[in-house]
Amino acid sequence: MNRTIRRLTSHIILLASYITILASCVDTEERPDTPSGNFEALWEIIDHHYCFFDYKQHEYGLDWNAVYNKYKVRVNDQMNELQLFEVMRDMLAELRDGHVNLYTSYDVGRYWTWHEAYPQNYSDTLERRYLGTDYKISGGMRYRILADNIGYIRYPSFQQSVGEGGLDDALSYMALCSGLIIDIRNNGGGDLTAAEKLAGRFVQERTLVSYLQHKTGTGHSDFSDLEARYMEPSSNLRWHKPVCVLTNRSVYSAANDFAVIMHALPQVKLVGDHTGGGSGLPMSSSLPNGWSVRFSACPMYDRDKQHTEFGIAPDVPAALTDEATSQGIDLIIEKARELLTK
Image 1 (spheres, rainbow, N blue to C red):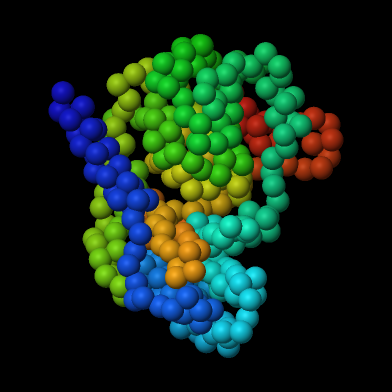
Image 2 (cartoon, one colour):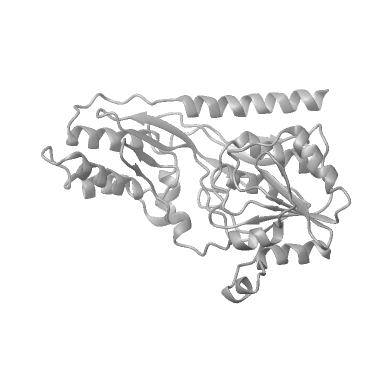
C-alpha cells in the first residue's frame, strides 16, 4: 500500500508540473504590433523564460545579448512578415533546441540539425524485414519473437500509447524469451505518460532515474533546487530479464526521457547511436501579431545530475553500414541480439 501511495504521489507531482508547464502562457511587457515590437517581444520572452542559457553558454558559447545585437540590425518597420519570420527563425536557431518553434499560419520555424547533421542509423526497409508481416500490434507498439528466441518490440512514437492490458499481453507472449529488444529509433517523443508506463514494466524497485528544476525568476540562473524523480515498479506484469534499448539521433523529447529512465536500470543496455536530446519541458507564449513561440522552460537531468539536452551516449555503440544494409542486415539489432544471447 505504501509503495502504491508513493507511486501515485510522485506521478501526481510530476504530471502537475507538466500540465502547468504545457498549459502556461508567459506574460511579457506589452509591445506594439510592428516588426520591431514583435522582435523585441520574442527576444524578451526567451531571455526571461528559456532554461538552458548557462548550459549552452558553457557548451558552445551562446551569448543571448550578442544574439540580440546580431539580429536587431536586420529588423526594420518597413519589412514584410515573411522577412520578419526569417529573422526570428534564424535568431531562435541560435539556441540549437528542437523544442524551440515559431508558429505562423504558413510555416513553422524549427531547428532540426540535432538529427539531420548525423547518420540516420535506421532503415524502414530493414525494419520490415525483421518484423515480417505476422507481427502483433498493440496501440503504437508492434512486436514479435525473433528466430533466436529474442523478443523484439518496435515503438516508433510515444504519441500512441499502449494500454496496461496490451503491455501484459505483449510481455506474456514473450515470457519465455531469453532477452528483449526495445527499438525506439526515430521516436521523436510524444506522451511522456506512455513512455513512463512502458518503462515501469522494467523497474523492480523504487529507483532514482532523473532530476527536474523549475524557473523561479527571469534571470538566466534563476532555478529551484534539483527535485529527484523516482520510478516505481508497475503493479502489473514486469520483465526481469536483460533488455537492450536501440537508439539513434532521432530519439528525442519523451523518447530521450525513456532512454534516460531505462539507462538507470541495471538489466538494461542502450545500443546504437547517441540520442538526440530534448530534455527541456516546453512552454508557449504569443507575440503581438498572433504568432506563437514554444521553448524549453524546465530542464531535466539524468540520475547523475548531468544535462541530457543534447542526448545521452549508448552503452554499446553500433551503426548501420551500406554493405550490411544492402544484405538485409541491421547491425544495431544484430549487436543487441549478440549481447542478449550471451
